[in-house]
Amino acid sequence: MSYRVAVVGATGNVGREMLNILSERKFPVSELIPLASRRSLNTEVSFGDRNLKCKALDQFDFTGVDIVLLAAGGETAKEWAPKMAAKGAVVIDNSSHFRMDSDVPLIVPEVNPEAIDTYTKRNIIANPNCSTAQLVVALKPLHDAAVIKRAIVSTYQSVSGSGKDAMDELWTQTRAIMVGDSVEKSKYTKQIAFNVIPHCDDFMEDGSTKEEWKLNVETKKILDPKIKLTATSVRVPVFVGHSEAVNLEFENPITDDEAREVLRNAPGVLLVDKREDEGYVTPIECVGDYATFVSRVRMDPTIENGLNIWVVSDNLRKGAALNAVQIAELLVERHLSKKAA
Image 1 (tube, rainbow, N blue to C red):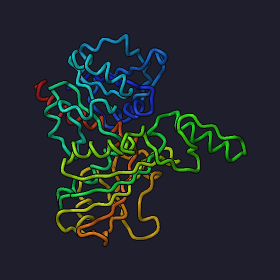
Image 2: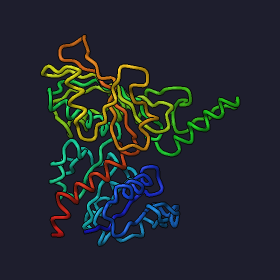
Image 3: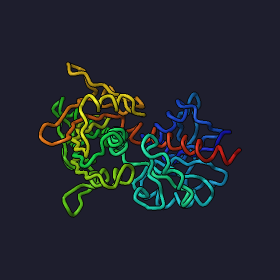
Image 4: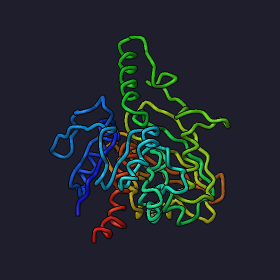
């Protein structure tokens, strides 16, 4: 059985990565339809060994489409996802718009696959925030082993999380500094080259940013509402790959050796934890990989049942495109293939 799949936002960073991953993982596609705004009409995108021309979203009829991978932002999702779902397509949305909707499952397949069974309420499934996705993949096996009470998360997020314009800004600012030109900024409020900015997304009334809020509420929805989580999200001058320093407090005792053994056998996790030079993973090493890497596993002697870990993943893959494709695979496995049978 194969499926008609549409990718909305096919010319963007995440949309192009979705096309790559669908091809790499040999997703059963009978027809792949790349969609974008009218200004990208007929722009070519790669799907495997083929080049496909983008069609205009507002001119396309979704009748007969089985799955839509939507990577075009919250406003587009708000307007179009219900229309696509009404035509019978299952929409997997990468934006934040539907994530906290009680009738929309928020899925990380390695963590809460059973939640997908409620997708028929709206025919929409939400993909979590990029920093949340890698975090919960690492936390799930540890939570199962010893029950996490509290998490303190500091994120170091690459500029690709803000889109192509942000990547271009890092490049142009870096070049300008190296040749002595003036530095221009537009995407970020402060210079990003050779700097770090403790400001991801908009500020909220309590002083948190929306990125920090998303980490909290999405982790609770996906993993466990009882977990207390506080976060500080920082934009760093890295092109691709998000990193997270995570401090955990557990209800039950767990040693660093026990944690390493749990993580070594966890789905989606690749443990790289040698207490020596280069015995850990940085964002450069994670680019293009499917895994969520965990390093620097060690006890926290300042609290009872405390542990520190370092989590790194390709935010365009596990943080966005890969997770969306994995959701599509889970959808086929648990539901669509059974309907066809």
